[in-house]
Image (cartoon, rainbow, N blue to C red):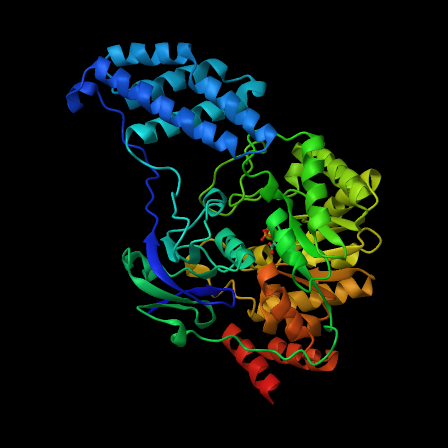
Amino acid sequence: MLEGHGVGLNFAVGTVWRVFRHETLPEWVKSHTTGTDAADEATALRAAISSVASDLDRLAAGADQTSAEIFEALKILLEDEELFGQAQENLLEGWSAAGAFGMAVNTFCELLSGESTLEERVADLQDLSRRVQAKLAGISLTLDLPATGEIILVAEDFSPADTAQFTSAVVGVITIGGGPTSHTSIICRAKGIAAVVAATAASDLQNGQQVLVDPVGDRVVVGGNANQATRAIEFKAGNSEPVITVRANVGNLTDAAAAARTSAQGVGLFRTELLYLNEKLQPSVQRQTTAYAEIFAASPAGPVVVRTIDVASDKPVAFLPLTHETTLAPESLGYRVLQEHREFIQSQLESIETARRQTGREVWVMAPMISSAAEAKDFCDLARSIGDFKVGIMVETPSIASEINRLEGIVDFVSIGTNDLSQYLFSVDRLNPAHGKLLSPWQPKLISTIAQIAKDALAGAIAVGVCGEAASDPLFAIVLAGLGVTSVSASPSQVDSVRDALASVDIETAKMLAARALAANSPESAKAQVLAALED
Ligand code: PEP
Ligand code: MG
């Protein structure tokens, strides 16, 4: 049995499918060390280039028109004869195909560097160089997952580009790294894939082993079966309406359609950055508008709360690069996007406004990672000058959490992002498996911080929601209601369970349970106290 942090309420049984990583490409060597000559290496290089070109054709065939144009442009760069000529010179100096091509790309990049408008081309060329070198080394940069069967993926962690490649054969996911609020967790919860993250002993799992992924039990059972799965508490929705509003978190059209099949009363968090993660260049207003209009139209009835782009080290966007790479702490561009790329946020808000008018939906907008009332005012003024929205901010930094009383008259609502709020409150990286316990929503300091935010918000007539992963836990959602939160937004796969939990109690019971959680001095005791009081 392996321990970890469970994600979601459903279990899965399947066969282990390990995803191996080859993050580092082989070092460049001279061809004489491999026993080949320049002609052999030139042939290998031509073959690798044409194979990457076919990959780009395949990607273009499955993409929308603008992305297809980008893949076409990349192919032209890749097949540039001048680039090949430069590589050939390096081959004649005795370098192997990978080294010769890598160096040729570097030479081209040096020529282009310094021109800000060509920075994108430099990044594209380096990406192509990596793909060609990977082909030459026989390394696959894609996951190549089967389309049928029932597999349980096992890896260190998965990036957004990886999760986009999950097929319907993926019934479960186990990660060695990551945490309850990491990207993998959010995506698995949204797709209803059973997951256990931060299972540090999972590196011992072997391909072909049958395992039970048991999120409710926070464990993986090797050789386990469905009978051993831990069942989630079942709440009986005795009341016709939940004590507070339940909305859904979405990131794309599929999520919006899934949310519309639940009891969600609108969307409480639309993570817009997911639309831009694969974009090399900033999309036009028209393209953004089309994407927003499609998603608004598909969303469940009720308001759609759209968050402007949130760029961070775990959510990189190519055309809005982070200013420095850091391994010391999770980095977020946060409000800096608004300062440094204001024209992009304006284009985003304009697209959202046009899509709002086209679809006739009620749209609210909010900014992520706001640190002060002054930043909040800057965003709200901008948003109100562009569209007919309710305007708010996310509360995910300790600084704004203690300044809610200054937001009166500035924002219409706040939405608490417990994922980042925990990360910054406890100074722990949400991707680091060692910090799972500090990232638990049941941490007493997180609970008392939410209580304070709710109290200050209500005093200023500001609506207060929670859209972090904590709101997808049905039992915790009852505590949130008791703390004074007025709405929660959960992952589509958990909306109905959260709603049932919130329709199983009255507000007085929720308040009593919140008081129990507030009085506890550890996450374990907070949860145990609430469960015991509920059973009484
Ligand atoms: C949060 O931080 O709680 C949140 C909802 O934002 P994200 O998970 O997208 O950073
Ligand atoms: Mg966040």
